Amino acid sequence: MPASTVKIPSSSGGAFDCYLALPAAAGKTPAIVLANAIVGVDEDLRGIADEFAAAGYIAAAPDLFWRTVPGPLTHEDPRTRPRGQPRLEKIKTGEADMADTLAYLRTLPQHNGRATAMGFCYGGPYAVLGPKRLGYDAGISCHGTQLLDFIAEFDGLIAPVCIMWGDKDFAAPAEVRDAYRALAARAKNVEVHVFPGIDHGYMLPHSPAAFDAATRKFSMGRALSILETLRGGQRQKAEAAE
Image (cartoon, rainbow, N blue to C red; front, side, top):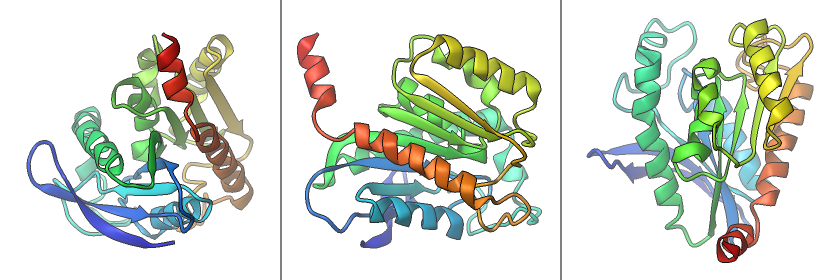
């Protein structure tokens, strides 16, 4: 399971770091691109990438904050919060990085041309933006923030999207959960899971107050199930039938 940090050329100039974990098995496979939380590509995110690679998938975690303060940060670091603001503007800028990462992955001999965007906290909106307009085939959000600002993006979106929060998550108050539950009720491609008693950051072991192993296991299972649907030639068959 080789893993390394590679440089990905940016479409706006320069290059950014991306943690890349490759499966040990030969053959073509889908990819999953992990959109980082506000703390960046830390040990938690690299561990998730390694887990997907061990399961037989290409996993990439681009540094979405490469234009700002360099280096690993923590939630207590005073530099952490400012680099994610203004939030909507920063997320818009990061769309190019998610698209550039996907373009890079498509050059790898192991890649079958299909990919899922999986966002955490700050990166949650890319679970919607990825399949809506960045070329991704599916999206997964774990304790994503700011998602009410992107609910209109589901209009015309047919790719599968899975949204997961805990019911104690500050990013998913009742009005946000209700809006997404209503969306899932009318859109067959959208699934929403809300976990009782679970807080923001449940996927990240270095958030000990929020981390929940059982909920993380469920979320990884949903991601692996979605990735499995991206094996083979479903897209090519669908395009040929049009």
